Amino acid sequence: MSDNAHEAKPWSMTKVVTASSAGTAFEWYDFFIFGALASTIGQVFFSGLGETAGVLAALGLFAAGFAFRPLGAIIFGAMGDRVGRKATFLTTVSLMGGATFAIGLLPTYATAGIIAPILLIILRICQGTALGGEYGGAAIYVAEHADDDKRGAATGWIQSSAAFGLIAALLVIYFTRTTVGEEAFLEWGWRIPFLVSVLLLLISVWMRLKLSESPAFQKLQEEGQVTKTPLREAFAEKESLKQVLTAFFAFMAAQGALWYCAFFYVQVFLERNLGVPGAEVNWIILTVTVISAPLYVFFGWLSDRVGRKPVMVGGMLLGLVSFYPGFHAIADAVNPRLAAAQAAQPVTIATDLDSCSVQFDLIGKAEFTTPCDIASKTLSAKGISYDRVASEDGSTVVRIGETAVPISDNGDAIAPALTAAGYPAAADPDEMDTTTLYFWLIIFTFAATALYGPQAAALVEMFPTRTRYTAMSLPYHIGTGWVGGFLPVTAFAIVAATGDIYAGLWYPIFFVGLSVVCSLLFWREKHGRPLH
Image (tube, rainbow, N blue to C red; front, top):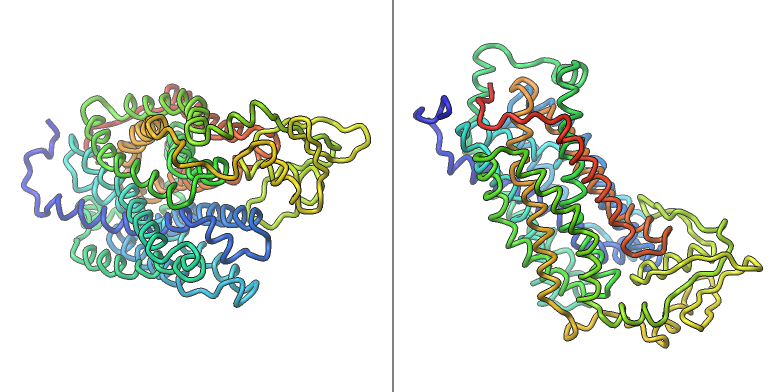
C-alpha cells in the first residue's frame, strides 16, 4: 500500500482531473484542427504554389508548429518549476486559444497575398510554443495530486485528452463541411472550427482558475527549495541529463512516430494516396479516436498493476509488427481498383537519375522542377508506386504499362494517361472493405494507446519535483514535436525518392525499433513509488 493511500485529501481528484484534462483537450483541439485541415489550409493560404505544393506547404507548416514545441517546453518548463504549475498552464491555454481564434480571422492568400501565410506562420509558432508548456503542466499537476498506486490511471485521463481534442476537432470540421457544403467550406466555412475555439478557451480558463497549486510544489515553496536554475539542474547535471536522454530514446521517440502514424499519417495516406474523400476520412478517424479514448485510461490503470514498461514496450512491439502489413491491407481494402491497376499496368519513370532530388521540403517552398521531380511528385501524390530507370538519352518519360507519357512542365499529361490505363481518380466508397480497414486501424490504436496511456506517469516518476516540469517537457516535445511532427513531410520525401508508397513507413518503424532496444537496455521504471 502506498504511503499516502489513506491520507485525507483537501482536494477532489475528480475536480483536479476534470479541469486539467478539459484544458488539455482544448489545447489539443486547437492544435489538431490545423492538421485535419491540411488540404484546405494549402488551398486557402498557399494557393500561389499549386495544389500539390500547397498541401505540402501546409504539412510543412504543421510540422513547423511541432518544431517550436521544445522551445515552449524550455520556456514554460522553467516557468512551471520557478513560479508554479497552475500559473503556467493558465498562461499556455490562453496563448493557444488566442492564436487559434486569430487564425480564423486571417485574410486568405487571394485577398492579402504573401502577408496571409506569413501571419499564419507566426500564429502557428505561437500554437506550438504554447503546447510545449501545456502537456507537462497538466500531467505533473494530476500526478502530484494522485495516490502513488493510482498515478497511471489518473494521468491516463490527461493522455485521453488528446483523443477528446481530436474528436472535438474532427466533429466540428465534419459537421461544418457537411452543413455548408465543400464549396462554401473552402471559401469561408474553414474559419468556423478556429473561431468556436474561443468558447472552449473561456470554459478552460474558468475551470482552471478554480484550482489551487499542486501539493508537491506547495511543499517546495514552504521549505524554500524551489529551484532558481531549472535549466541548469535539468540539463547540465549528469544524472538528470541521463534521465532526460533515457526518456527520449526509451519511449518518447517511439511515441512521436507511432501515435502520429496511427492518427495523422494514416489520414494523409487515405486522402492523398488512396483518394478517399476528405469528409469520409474525418469520419473514419473520428470513429477510431472514439474507440481510443477509454483505452488510454485502461492502459494507464494496467500499468499501475503490472508496471509501465511491460505495457509500453508491448505497444511499441505491436506497432512494429503491424504497420507494414496493415497499410498494405488498408490500401487493398479501400481502393481495390488502384491495387489491380498497379498490378496490371505498372508505372516506370525513365529519366536522368542524377536529376532526381530528395524532396524533403519542411516549409513547402523548395523548387523541384526537373522532369524527374515533377513526375515523382505527381505520382507520389496520387498514391501510385513506381520504379525509376535510367533513360538512354537523358529524357524523362513515364511508362504506364506499354504507354509512354512525355513529361511537361507541370506533369498534366500523367493524369489522363493513368485514367486510360484503368487507374481510378478516387476510391469508390461502395467498393471499400470497411471491416478490414477498421480492423487494422484498431490494431494501430491499441499499439498507440498502450504506449501513450502510461507515458505521463512514467515521465513524472523519472524526475524530482524541483526540476520535473522542465526535465520531462523537453524529451516529450522533441519526441512528439520533432519525430512525430516531421513524420508526414519526411515520409512523403521517402516515398518520392523510392517510388514506393509504403516506404514512408520505415520512418516510424526506425524510431519505434530504436526505442524498444533503448527501453530494454536503459530504462528503469519507478511505478508505484512516492514522487519525493
